[in-house]
Each structure stands twice: as C-alpha cells, then as structure tokens.
Amino acid sequence: MLTTFDWLRCCESGAELIATTDLIKSAPDLFPVEEEIGPPVCGIDGPCMRCWIYPRLPESSDHYCKTCEAIISKAKGLGRISRDCMIVWGFVNFLPDPIKRDGEIKKIQARCLYLLDENHFMLIMLGHKLKDWLREVLLYHGSELKGLMLLFPTIGKGGSSSMGDILCRAIHQDSRFPMDRLRIRFFSRPAELKFPHRRENQGILTFEASEFLGLLEMATIFRAQLLPNEQDMVREAVSLKDNREKSFYWGRLMGFLRQEARDMLTAWKFKEWPENRIRLLYELVAYAPFTP
Image (cartoon, rainbow, N blue to C red; front, side, top):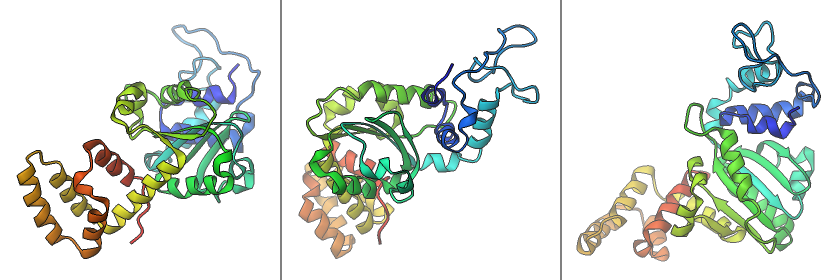
C-alpha cells in the first residue's frame, strides 16, 4: 500500500523523519509494499492511529501498527539531534558522486540519506556541516551539476504543519527552474515554504550555488570574529533609522570591537548593507561552524 516515500510524508516531526529514513535503510522489512489493511474504524477497533491504514499491534498501548510503533520508538531519542539538523531536498540532472556512493555517507557529514530516484534525493545533516558539504559537491562536479536544492530546518511536533507537509511543499517547488545551473533556495524557518514569494520579493531566497557558498563563508568569518553579544550589538547599531544616531553608535561600537572585527566590518562596508542582506547573514550564522 504505502511506499517508503509515502512513509516519509507521514512524518509529524523532524525526529520522525530521521527515524523513518534510518529504518528504511536498517530495517527494510518494516516497510512491505503489500500488506493487509486494518479493519475499519469502529467503537472497539480500527486501523493504526498514526497511518490509519495498517492493523494495530495487539501489544501497542498507542494502537500503532508495527511500522509506526518502530518509528515512534526510535524518534523518541532523536528530538535534540533533529533541532540542529538541516534538510536538503534536491532535484538535479544527476546524483552527485558523494551521494551515490553509499560508503561516503559519513564523509559527506550526512545524518541520513534517502534516494527517491536518479534525480531526487533528501539529505539530513547537522546545520553547521552544510558549508563543507556544499563545497565538496561543487568541488566534485563544478558547473556540470544542475538543478535545484531546497534547504530548510526540521520542525517539532504539535505545530500547525507536519514535517511531511513541509516536505511536500518543498517537492512542489523543485521543478520551478530550468536545468541550466545549480540553484539553492534557502528557508530559515519551515513555515516559510508556505509563502516562498515573501522571501523571493526580499531577494533572500534563491541563489546560484557558488554565490550561496560565498554567503556561508562570510557567515563563518562573521561568527569567528564576533562574540554572540557583539553580533547583537552590531545588529542593533545598523538597525537604527536615524542616520546621525546610527553614525554615533557605530563609531562607539568600532572603538569597542577588536581590530580584526573592525577591519572585517569596514572591508565589507557592513554599515551600508540593506536590511534584508543583514537579516540573511544573521540567519546563516546559525548554520556556520564555529572556528575561533
């Protein structure tokens, strides 16, 4: 009845998505293509209360089928890991070599990987590994790899949307561009996939792959040169609307920061950056590795 990809779309949270992807690889017998469906819903019985298709396990206190029981059980220990993860949904002209080779999973810093077909893949990794992974993909293939990669974080359970719903929204966008180059679409929050035009209108959604890698490099440098409280001070200073007040506080801030940080901000002309570009940099800092 359900394919492995259908099971991914049933996931409520990022933890369930990771658990399902892991189990598809480690325990494929849990996902039979042909299996008898459960009984109809009635007062004393019914199908699994998660997938609503397969029969419940007699010993399941939550009235789950064997597959859902295994997924939920495994997901219970993955909540903290899930919060630090980034999902990459890719629609490309061919699968990159590091992804095709199953033994390379640890090398490309992936938490788990799902290959839908020869052109689609889903990769889940720790967010701070994103820069190294993207650099390696571009190093392997350069301009030969074309298509679209959508990047978005996982979500927890209990929100207005499920992880499966967010994944479906990503899939809906994957063929919007021609296969003439590799593009990246970055969403800082899963809910933004419902309204992609908002980020697009602000110029902070779609980038060429090399351009996005450059932005990740800048975010890494920014995080290395400024402590968290200094990052907050910089953002507060550049957010001031009054130009005289902004110049006054910017001058005081420059006197407070270390020479390396001052040189970085001056070279980037950070004070003159538009608001949306500053917002994007701070969003990317959350996924930048810390390199003191």
